[in-house]
Length: 246
Picture 1 (spheres, rainbow, N blue to C red):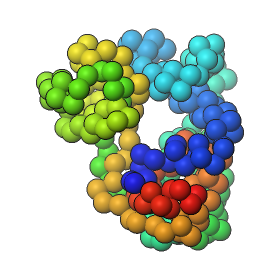
Picture 2 (picture 1 turned 30 degrees about the horizontal axis):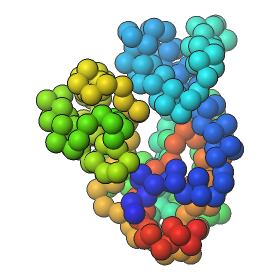
Picture 3 (picture 1 turned 180 degrees about the horizontal axis):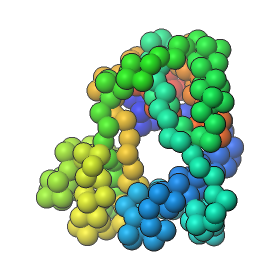
């Protein structure tokens, strides 16, 4: 079971849904505000904003929250955020990428560094682990979008690079620069997607036992609890037995 696509399952099993949901809403609203401030406040004219709004809707962020986040970007007092990426190693040698959006670089850097240290990891330089990941666009469709062959054909025609289909649905991957174009083409062919966003896809994964997974969970959860951290990606892999033990 590869970690890059299963973290939500672990959070669900730990009963953290409500706390995670609240944090997620806040972070998605911040992304919407930043995207709208950097470009046009109309999602149809701003690809980054369109994707941010779509991602927010995919996890049921209320319409009024989305509209308020866009409106906030047009105010003269809207906060200015820097987007920063931190990289390092977690327990068991797992590669970890931390994406932040902050109005205080020093505060965020200090928090991320101390969190890695306290949780048995080590923060590295930019580029120290990202070479082990591919930066891709990911578009998710439900099973109802079609069978594996239908989705594969639509993905190839839209310019996608890869497709993974299973009982949970279809994950379609494309070059990061092609995400908006491929997403639009796929929605014409297959209908509304569940999600469309940029991800870090591990080229290889690092297996963890139960003890290592528990330590890594503490690191990721502590990072994600910080308001400055937008998302955390790690290349861990665990067996079904370890998942059950968690």
